[in-house]
Image (cartoon, rainbow, N blue to C red; front, side, top):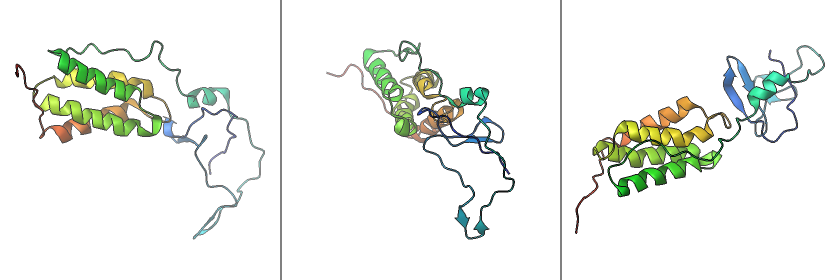
Length: 175
């Protein structure tokens, strides 16, 4: 049996599945719960103990709110590209990730990891520099609607791993 607490009337309370603490799930705007009145093939949900609904504690509200956006927008990474063409690719992918819409951010981060991963596979840019660029750009999304640093790291790693066999070499000194 789990306690059910009311959601404050705030549009920025999101769904959190275990990201706040062990055994703590929230179903804010866009989420749902199974409650008394719900029916399943195994029977109906009923009220186990009829108690008044308690208010959501302020400390939990603070944990449910997304972090404030970073000030000054996306900060360019310290990664160094050997030429302006590579620098433009790094900056373009970083901008794409930093400004991704919430429901597309993981897809866009993976796509950008594929692009930069191919350059890493060809030794055009170091894995550390490419990862730093993508991680810095994804930092604006951490904590927003359950997106975590671990998820960002896993997505970048998967993109790099997938693109390892598909190196992209940049032709230099072409006429």
